[in-house]
Image (tube, rainbow, N blue to C red; front, side, top):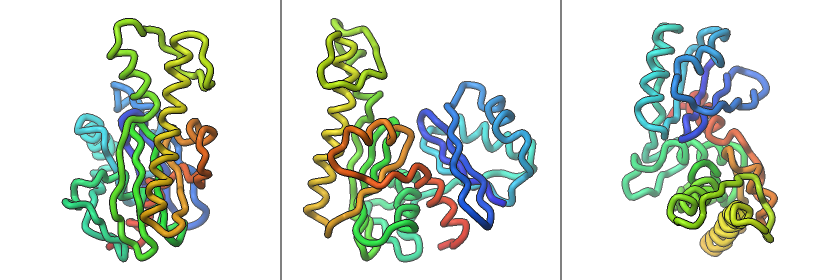
Amino acid sequence: MNLVVDIGNSFLKWTLVENGPWRKGRSVRLQEDVNTLLNRIWGNIDPPQNVLVSNVSGRRVMTALGAWTAANWGMKPRLFQSAERFQNIRNGYRVPQQLGCDRWAAIIGARSLAEGDLCVVDCGTAVTIDALTRDDRFIGGVIFPGVALVRDSLLSGTSEISEKQAGYKEILGRTTAECVSGGSYFGVAGAVDRILSEMASALDEPKPLITGGGARFLLPFLDHSPRMEPDLVLIGLAQTLRSPG
């Protein structure tokens, strides 16, 4: 049994990988006391053979996680990092190691699920959209703010807007808070649709896949119809454990 972990800016997602059916990933919001969080989610599971972590949250959470696994399971986690290639998949970043490790894992996961040209949309704190050709070349992508970042940047950057209503998702808001929230959803969705259309001109009928904690909220706003795969990063991590190199 192996444990794969995706640490984002706001959430920690994990699953156990064994022979047999895929176990759906579980997601928990990160909190200041990481030790208490890990006691709650992992305190009653048997020690895994390996712990593989994709981490984009910085040093604090990873340090706390490593201390916890050492104290409770007598082992340290392995940090997943981007590379020039994984099997046939080639990393086209100018400096391959600078590609976000979660993006690289999601690309690997996407290829394990679908053939042909792919666009991989990951909706977290930021939204990333990456292009993978049918001959396994990652040729680049984009990064832009997710819904919460768009909304919060507007609230913090203007003196006349202070109300916050995160859940309003209509095009005709009738309070300033509703207008900000609705505009954030439609604005980010419009960006995703435009970028997918632009990428389609550089690819051959690409299939879009969407993942990330914000995917299910953004999906209803999209004109494109991406295939929902909530565990792409975890699936990619599991692939590297099953088939190294």
